[in-house]
Length: 294
Image 1: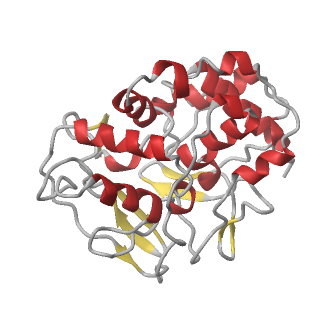
Image 2: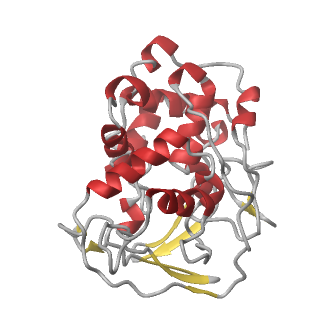
């Protein structure tokens, strides 16, 4: 959930798929994934994405002692504090006054994929814009359809404070991004763990210009301070997961319980990941198995 601290980061992640020479899952099984078979409309697809792998509510839904506050889905206010910023997740419900109900679909898509609000201001960390730039046209439209379907919630959220320079942009305008489907094989697992789920954002160490996806994808190490104390992004390459079975990896993703019985701390959104389709989990595990040891 941390965004890069430099001006830009590598935009295209599908190129890594060229190094993935082994598929650890059956393409026939993956073809049954929610990505194509179960989502017949944009709203159905958006509901699946937002309630599972994309998990925007993990940051944008306010939380109390017992978890997310009922009736406040995506109403904002969750505080994320780090040395270079004090960030409040904004209200992204369709409320016109305090949310994004006055934005057009195109403006919402620009905010998600380019990090630019309708007034021209830049969205800062921890929004992972460099990854969201590669969300496909269909999937970003599906996310907007889901946001539009929510009830408006009036919730005024403080403005974030950045003690760092934000980039003038995160790159050139995103014109169009092609669909990535289970038929794309290993690239699909990369798409789930990258642009959609931004797993590699939290689980890769920082380099001089942001997460070091060039040399250290999945190596872990980032610290996440919060009410829970300080948690650290785990190494999710075969160096750490090599002795785990596929079932072990799926269990820790969907329940937060490691093979030794210990539990993950936030911000890992296991409540959302518990709703992942089996075939999508298979694709993610295949991608993690394909990463070089770090």
